[in-house]
Length: 333
Ligand code: ADP
Ligand code: MG
Image (cartoon, rainbow, N blue to C red):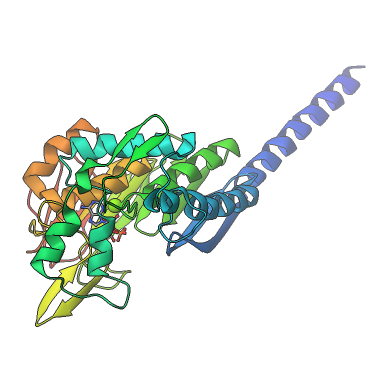
């Protein structure tokens, strides 16, 4: 009798052990791949029992988000339709546009998605980039801030076109985050161009992220940051630009002048729990410059790393976990 009890207990222990090992094995199952959406490469490295299913859904969802909500060029997209005379939109993009309007206002319109006419005019990154005349620029920025959203109705002043290029990749990270949670993925890194989602069910997991040397190769970090699950977006003057008469014109505009921002910064990396906030604020801060960005970042409970034109690296107060990786850069706070 006693022997039987011992045998039964041993079998139970072995079963539990096998179950634990199997659970661990499946939870550490992983899937990595990449696809194209939002005019960029989206790469995902996912760990968890349903890593591959999560990847497939992220891929479908981000392509849908691009084609049916955010794209300026897809005729099916809600933004395309607004830019071409429609005034009513679905509740989902309406919610996004309300959040965007809030960020525009709090950033004092240094982030402004009403700049579609201006980005078309400059054409940076299109192959037909040019330096527009001053009168063309002033007419393209006129009323850009004045678009409004109320409920599901959007009002675009005459000549104003929406361009969500500075927010779309961050929004993509937020959509990806929901899917990773739905599939109970253990850990993941999803990079949507310059916006990266760091996901983990372990609140203590630390991710190491490189901040690119603005004048170097993509794999040459100027600095390294160690952070827990969040969204990280970088806006840099090196991403897209053209040169004319020895002058460089980049793709992030100061909405108050209509010219490429000149804030003394080469790049800003913003860390936030929200992809939309990190993406939008990285653009806003690149326009505002270091000092003026600090209250905005505080308002959104976000942190940031700035790289100045002189290769100085600055962070928001109390930001820990940054190490300089290239001796051409100096940490100054
Ligand atoms: P990237 O697209 O390189 O990741 P950003 O997120 O900063 O960089 O977005 C830049 C894009 O956003 C530009 O290509 C343009 O379409 C648009 N844009 C430029 N300046 C602004 C601005 N001040 N506010 C909002 N959108 C902007
Ligand atoms: Mg941005």
